[in-house]
Length: 108
Length: 121
Image (cartoon, rainbow over all chains, first blue to last red; front, top):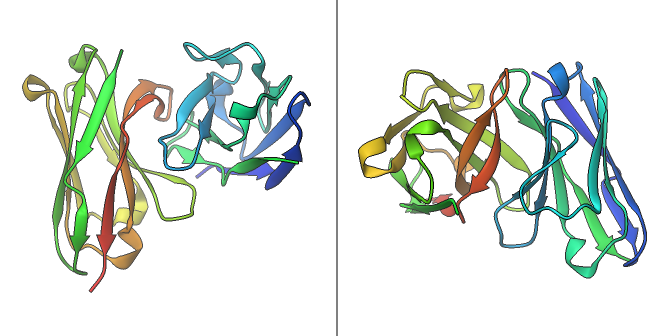
């Protein structure tokens, strides 16, 4: 099973700042099959990024994904108030699919 | 727009059974795999089970130890999860999710709102 470790556990930033969230895989993820999700309290997760770098339908371009193998990054270029939430990475290159433990992005 | 609506959650005693349902709309159901993903209170996401578009391929998380059964009825646009021998650690919100395939499983591009299952005496 591939273990995904997200860091930091909590990230405190202000609107307008840049957020960088990390997801480290062990062993490596196959062929960039990595996705990112956003989850707000009481809501279902929402797909942001798939294939490590592809934005899902309707996702603004301030969200971007990068990385391959063992190290992946979700970047939010300019935080808006609606972006403060929990973010999860997920790999789907090797069975079983697994999720990271999440990064909470909170307002500073 | 794809929509998925779960139902069937509730309070059940340890050792009991429950059947979850999910009705999908807004897309061609028979073109997609479907999944159940759960989230224990205050915890992260855990994939539970997956079923291919034709029901030919089915897979489960090892942690379930054979207690759950996933099925679908494309004619009724529905996904099901039969949950048996329930334990306290099965307490969670259960989401149905539409899958888009990778080599080892799916990523999930549409989710229901979830249904809460509580296992307690």
